[in-house]
Amino acid sequence: MSEQKNNPLHGITLEKIVTDLQLHYGWEKLGSLIRIDCFNNNQSIKSSLKFLRRMDWARKKVEDLYLDTFHK
Image (tube, one colour):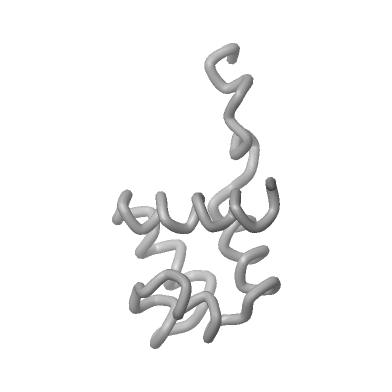
């Protein structure tokens, strides 16, 4: 547990991250900030989670945006 001490995302689910970002920015702005298909075309939390759980590079971008937006 000590290795998570400095992790600001510890305890925050990917679903909460995507939901919070979508509520804050909306799909259109979110899709322009992070250019991935699930934010621009098939816009739903479920499809986004499915994609982000498979693509580490995209998940990293979403997590970074979350930290920049909500944990300054």
